Image (cartoon, rainbow, N blue to C red; front, side, top):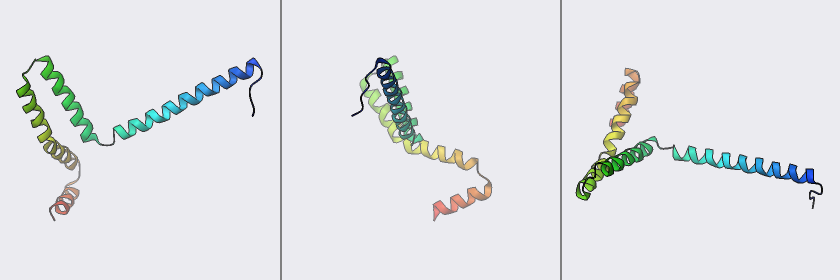
Length: 106
């Protein structure tokens, strides 16, 4: 085994261990960020639910109304997806829009 024997060697070893730990934390954090943002519609849903929960607590709504509001947001998720798809289609040319529509209706 190779081990540090002088004080300077201990400082260098500690410095490289700290740098290695920082690099490892950066890589893991970046990977987690990529995975967390893979589904933008899920992220939007979670942000909407967080905002809804904050609003309900801030306005001190009763529990029955809170349940119904959460059910509505969950049920309207598909509609929000469709609105997002329509926004994407609006940015396409009319030819491509027609091709997408014909491909999805077959």
